[in-house]
Amino acid sequence: MTAVLAEHFSGAEVDGVAVALRDDGTNRRARLALTYSAGTGPATVFAKAVDPEHAELVALTSGLFHEPRLFRSGVDLGLDHPAVYASFIDEPGSNFLMIMEDVVARGADPRDSTRPMTIEQVANGVRGLARMHSRFWGDRLAKTPALDWLEPFVAFEGLEHAPLHIAHERLGDTVPPEIPELSGTELFVDIWARYIGTLTTTAPTLLHGDPHIGNTYVLPGDEVGFLDWQMARRGNWSLDLGYFLQGALTIDDRRRAERDLLDEYRGALELPAGELPSAEEVWLRYRASVAHGLAIWIATLSGGDAWQRPDICLAFAQRYAAAFVDLDTRAALATLG
Image (cartoon, rainbow, N blue to C red; front, side, top):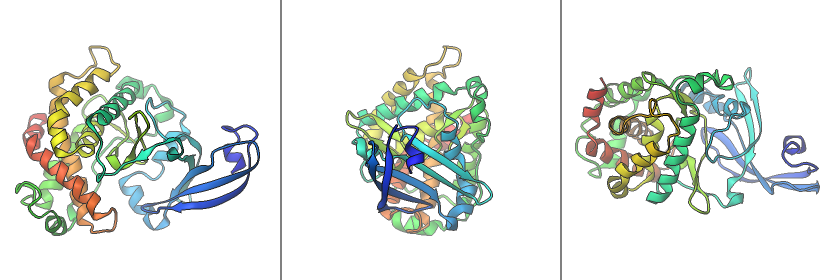
């Protein structure tokens, strides 16, 4: 650990490491408490590695090495994220290890769908995404050789096999009736895969790829940071914008503020006029983007308790279901072609 921190905390010598918290999911994650025999450094760090039982699934849906590669690249993302002190990749062993900042130590409040953000907090997150997207928009991404490995965001297989009856039973009558009427083929092929196909037809940018509220934190002063970059991809900006905004707010707050928040995003894009998407395009692609959140969280809810707590899944599914109907996502997809 001393070698890991040496570049960031000169003179720090670690003499003790203890597991303060273990929180495993598809990856192994732990907060480590550190003590020092010399110098000073963080009291805690966060460690993340592959869970061998889930390595194949992560490789299929997320990209096993995307997050460690992103932070080994050294690119400035333009928004708040945990500082990464070391990132090791073991390709033959299908494993990686990341040692990073414990953002709670600087007052961060990690969120999930049961603790939605305020409109102003989401506005800060939207502006952060716009800053990042601007840095890698179009040719800028192609001119960043450190990200040559970045894959396009394409539809992955398997969602169509989700046992939707489980999700429908849990949702009951809390979502519009159109939602339980969707078959697996309709939701995951005709809607989700169709939307995902639009992500590679425009000028790409660097995408977080999975910026739901459970991968965010709020700092003192309401700045928003983003965790868990394993789904980093290249593609159309709308995936990040819609997935974050629609899932981070209550349904009522989203309905009240989404137009203004889209204006905030567009206004924060640091692009010349010729590259700036029109307000009409932003609105259209935002409406279409609901397809992603709805499909992902209906599938996750259908998995029972295997991947996320039921209350977290339910809140997400309800928000994206309401947005799907409110924003007439089917019509938006038809317009995109």
